[in-house]
Amino acid sequence: MEEATRVVLVEFPKVFGIDLSITNEVVLLWLGAIVTFLLAVAACRGREAATRGRFRNLFEMLVEMVEKEVIGGNANKATRALTPFLLTMFFFILVCNLLGMVPIPGVFKAVTSNINVTAGLAIAVFALTVVAEVSHHGVLGFLGRFMPAGIPRWAGVFLVPIEIASWLVRPLSLAVRLFANMVVGHVLLFVLIGMAVASGWWIVGVLPAAAAVVMSCFELFVCFIQAMVFTLLAGLYLKEAVEGHQATH
Image (tube, rainbow, N blue to C red; front, side, top):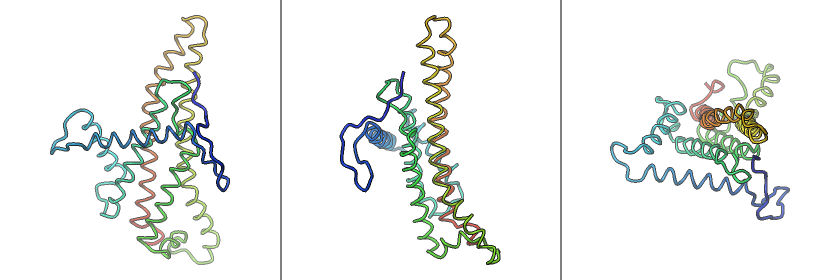
């Protein structure tokens, strides 16, 4: 069993060195966006005072969990305005992660195991963070984050580059964390399934097959956790940008 590789479906010429061709991974991203939209529409259709049905209850539970863990109950109005973006990010990443669990070899894969996809998501969070901080604190307030309060000016020569580097590392850490966890989990799962299939004796293949079943269950948990961790970190960065940081207070 092999994970789907990159296949060019419609080839376009590069623009400024960027390949705009439509690949199977692009189609899976579109599919992830469509599924996320349809799930949200189905969960919100015919809303009552008290939600009914297991699907709507599950969806509402996930929404409340993200709002509680990521946004927080004491958030101000400006911070709560970020809720739709963070919820969309959470469900989109979760759906993209779960696409890799569809048992159709060579077709489906977790597109979040592609560093370009996770980097794109991280850059979107990074860009929104900059916009939010500049709009709420101004350009000077944004630049002030790189100079810790109460630090002598001469020390800023050493501290400012460190603060800038640590700030720039944020999108990199977001992208690499999600990418690495999804790659490792799926590779291990495919190895175990491959061992079970390749084994000539059924009694020898029982152990890797059983391990693959256990890993599949664990992988479902990892899909959820990684979506939650990415959204949680994104929420922390955005809350800091909106509500202020130590450097400006």
